[in-house]
Length: 183
Ligand code: HQG
Image (tube, rainbow, N blue to C red):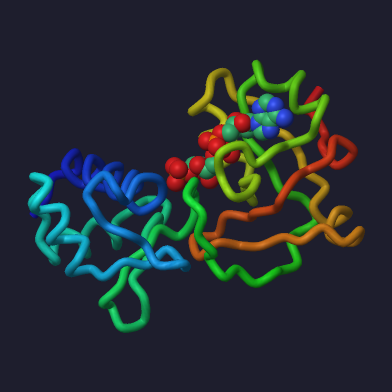
């Protein structure tokens, strides 16, 4: 079995190739982000990363944020969200809860309050349904601050929301009038 450290390292490398740089191991993702499991394992091996099917399953199942998913047949795999390359995750619009949270770094606040929340390199702005998750996400960038997002109000005004397979809420852009900063 894999150690936790190996599992995390593998998960990070899978995030890189399934979200950002499939060309790094010479594979292509289809328009919905899927790749054949066998293609992935072979490509990994020829790039020096030996991963068994059993260990791949272990990484997918134990991943703390459920970052990867197999399709119904179990023959294909993709990242559930977080891509920078152009793929269509066929998300269905969904009514968000009244309030969602966005964790960011203090240093970004002035800019965010100027232009709203932008998706930057990703496909969407990522929002969390609880403060704890948002704090963690924000802490990746610096001293964290958790913004309250008036998602219900946005939805009522026609802004589309989606939810990824692993429960992250997604939207195109959050204008400043829907952002509340803690005092
Ligand atoms: C900030 C992780 C200045 C934004 C997490 C964020 C998440 C602005 C950063 C997922 C801005 C982008 C996404 C503006 C937004 N001015 N800064 N106008 N608008 N920003 O990493 O939301 O571990 O692309 O606040 O759990 O931090 O990868 O997005 O701080 O779900 O699975 O620009 O990544 O998941 O950073 O994180 P990111 P994020 P994984």
